[in-house]
Image (cartoon, rainbow, N blue to C red; front, side, top):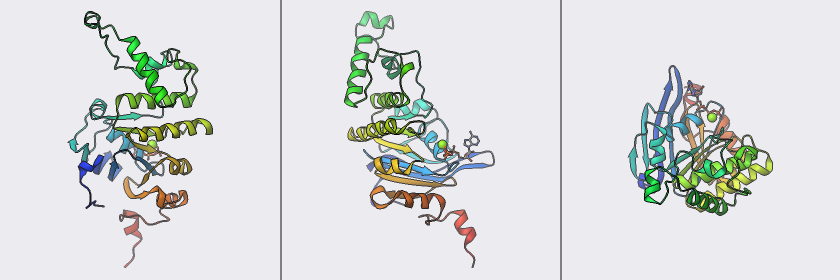
Amino acid sequence: MSDTTSTATDFALSASHITRRYGAVVALADASMQLRRGEVMGLVGDNGAGKSTFLKILSGAVIPDGGDIVVGGSPVSFRRPSDALEAGIETVYQDLALVDTMSAVQNVYLGREELSKNPFLRLLNVVNDGGMRKRSREVLTELGVGIQSVNVSVKGMSGGQRQCLAIARALLWGRQIVILDEPTAALGVRESAQVLELIGRLRDHGVSVILVSHNMQQLVQVADRVTVMRLGRTIATRDVADITPEGIVGLITGAIPADVSTPEDSATIVH
Ligand SMILES: Nc1ncnc2c1ncn2[C@@H]1O[C@H](COP(=O)(O)OP(=O)(O)OP(=O)(O)O)[C@@H](O)[C@H]1O
Ligand SMILES: [Mg+2]
């Protein structure tokens, strides 16, 4: 599908015709997405449709075989996750990389500790503990994340609090784009609601979000648009205001025709 009214620079991220094989398996046959600034884009599809592979390519964890990615108007070619981080894309995986024995503040700053402002202490690699604690508290308060203290270890935190903490970390470090792969899959109703609310707040901060979810009810609550994948292809994009959860499921299963012709469609056409 071509977009004739907008150019790539209007988008936070634009991915076109991405392909990726694993041996004989075609994980991505042709995946495209235009992510607007400050929108939540849902990404849906059946198991094995290629959602996680697409996200991993956008986060630099997997290198595509073909296709183009433009971030903030500039073409990019990610070879490793740090390339995507540098371009302002932060990814929160379902199995969060939080360290149990560390505190909330240590987790927020994991691997990116701020050095002390004192030039002599900086030479000794002494970190700016007070500054990091203050900034962590500010971000968590700004986002409305209820954590009693940023100094206690995350071991005792609930799944929802941990997910919120990881998203807060994303906001602190990657302000433009946040990628979330099934963030509520392991959470209960209340905790899921908390995470969804937090995603809304990210959007309020002007962050663009890509959200993979199998829960259509949740998705329509929080997403502005939804992109549907089938067999490694992005087959339709809809405004959430124009579609019901049942309509999305219809696009996923093929009960509702796709915007692009797919191999299964052409196989069923008999002349
Ligand atoms: N590292 C890999 N090696 C081989 N095949 C892979 C690899 N990663 C993904 N695949 C294959 O690529 C296809 C797409 O997988 P992917 O994980 O992207 O799907 P998904 O849409 O995220 O599915 P789910 O909803 O189950 O998470 C599947 O057929 C999968 O088996
Ligand atoms: Mg997946």
